[in-house]
Length: 371
Ligand code: SF4
Image (tube, rainbow, N blue to C red; front, side, top):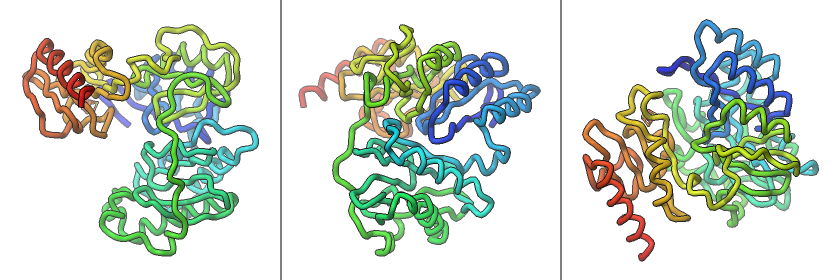
């Protein structure tokens, strides 16, 4: 994939886990052939940016040697499987994820849209309900519940059959016209047509875990990355502690209980204000951006109270946070402010300068606190 600062190479570690050797190898490759800061995306992938086209083949070869990319790039693009990161040795989650990834890599796998994805959320309590996925797999007293995003019911099957069942549901999505021009999402399909009764056998569990925060969790330390940015040297330092599990929350779970390195770019406390802001690449990394975003978001973070989110976007596309939030959009004529909406929403204020923006945000957050 091309970007204005070079090629982007996406790495989807199998079952969402980097071994210590893979993490060290990836850090070395980023330093050698890409921008030395990787990005953890909200789909739990790692991106190498700024790859010189003349080095692309070398990089892919080295990533294959680490078992971090597939031989067939088109098949690999379908391997969109997010995995709940808190699994332990007795948990079927990683095996189920690997099984599903294996089925998606086969020649007879359904030709799904590029963004179509799966969430293997089979821990004791679902934690990936807010993650982008089209088919969800969750633990059930009688096995695994497989259900489509946008529905509240699905089918329960033994864990050994769950991956095949997820693929069956994916085939139904295609047969039902979910991707007429090669694009489409499950939730959008279910807004047009009902889910067949045969897929509505059991309700999903009503409880779910809210977005986990940095700190100690079962199996390791969850550490946040500011805007998902992961310097290669930081990746290398974390890999000396343990294997790494990727999450869609711009956090990594570092396996084991060894102490973490003390690095300012790591968010280790749940009340860190940097967790409450999202910002896209902005200027200078994105051609479409009307201004810098991340510096502004960090400067504004202390204004954002716990439980609220601020999204700073370089344009109306809103890549960093496609969901409603307090949203600031950089424009050629100042900042637009949307009090509750996405970057594409109708602004409540337009063309604000920096000081007026700060004033409006202070009002916005303090007004909401008194509602
Ligand atoms: S939101 Fe706009 S400016 Fe920001 S990364 Fe996406 S396309 Fe670029």
